[in-house]
Image (tube, rainbow, N blue to C red):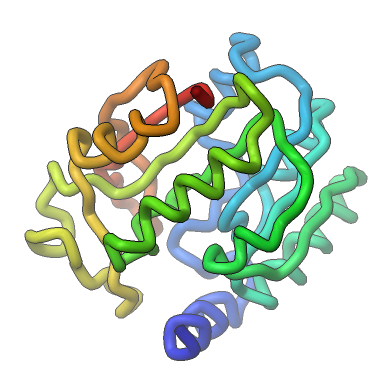
Length: 210
């Protein structure tokens, strides 16, 4: 755990340098907001990085709580929110401590985070915690790298150019995990950007709490 944290702190040594950091929100999240599928409500952003997506939601009337394991990322996120003139409750937390969170949320999302949970025995408890933190009928959006692709090798556990190991699950595997707790509204493969000019196949799941 400590080694992984050190790697993330190193990656965030320079603001904006992380290969997954983009100031503009993904079009899929924008679509959910602009289509009204997600309306202003209480939100939890898991693995928020430098906070740009949380800030986008806050700028559109959402009440947003967001956390990341990287202290540097959270320090950047707080500054970005200040610069944008919006209020977001940013704090440092590891996903393994998710069970310590209190309160309920109407919408929870983890954009490019779930693939960081390598131990298959920890993936179900994580999803259970997301389920616990949602109000009845609350929505959950999860986007993670897909094992349908051959990016960075084959198999479920692959090493990214950042030297961080990631879990590449397949759509059907995640469907079996999620459908125990959620009604899956939409599942599909999408392309997510990676600096400098890559697009990586990812599993997209938009769900409602059962």
